[in-house]
Image (cartoon, rainbow, N blue to C red; front, side, top):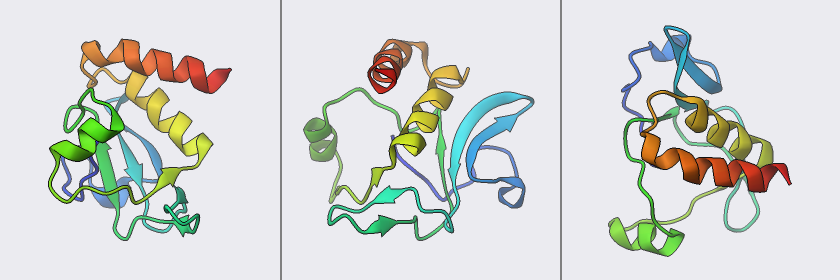
Length: 117
């Protein structure tokens, strides 16, 4: 998944609050408010995105291992490990969204099953 500061969601950013983004009552993306701690950086320091960011579920999603993904992007680096509840909310929103390509749903289902164990 890739975050973006671009408003690809079609909902004005000033109307968004941290978490699920709905448009016409459908989950379309996930919004990270820059003022909300979402996880920890690689050194274990609390992490907040420096700017408001969105993960649109119809953009930037691919199937790969972590190392394959990082090798496929230029200057990629891990900046945060999401808190468990944040991660669960994000994966659940992606799974429930009609914007998420159906070929990814089995992988998301597997992740959700692992989270719920």
